[in-house]
Length: 253
Length: 89
Image (cartoon, each protein chain N blue to C red):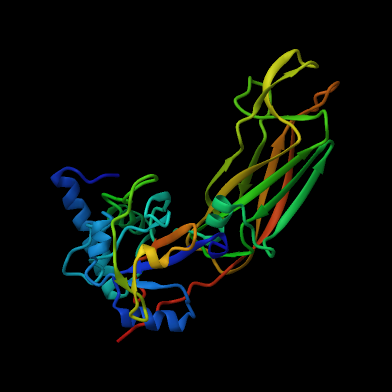
């Protein structure tokens, strides 16, 4: 999905060319795996992990960082995570940067009153510790609004939240809401109308057992039309996700 | 947490040693030590050039021995460059 968006992909580690070759062969990796044998490039990026004693084999590894860069070498965006058990999934990058979602990725559609919400994950499969993305597409019938943020007390802003033990951390961002005069309330509050969408991320916990899990979440909102403002609503939803088993790296001895 | 004082650095070294000892002996690592070890190995976490910054030039062989640089790795829009731990462990 990243390649289809006109970006090359490559990965760097301090392994020998031969180790990279065996690794690529074993896991049928077709992207270039670059061999930074003495960690000189890792050092030049300023991302060498200095916590590891030089006598140890692990000395020379970088902090886990991913860069999206222009053909001229300028950084567009940088992704970094707490440690190597956590990684931003390629599907999350493709969703955030290019709005691309896999056809197989699970989606659920919810309807209430004038509002339709479609929530989809960036991928159908993931690893424990990965950060995946999700997209929530909202559509309101003409004349209706839901609230944005910030709001006075007593109002419910539009949000999408995931629950459950598989999610370690999450975020959800909506575009800035437009101040709208609600005649029925006699107040001006930030709100959305028509079609809009929010982008979220889910950092999956590590470790997790592999297999099929169900991610449960809820959408909260409050709808307001020309003559009536409905009570706040929270609609639960579920999305399936397949957790893949970790592969052990081959030993090149 | 950051490890700044000499006492902090001693604690960090002790965490690293204990983690290494358990691993070498094939013993289970308690969750609390695991968490401390992650913190210790992330001390001074550096992420390199940020948005708008320029990455350093590089020329590295790929798994086929072909010399690679940003110029020959990029697609029309650029490159997604991932740094990873190791293909060996």
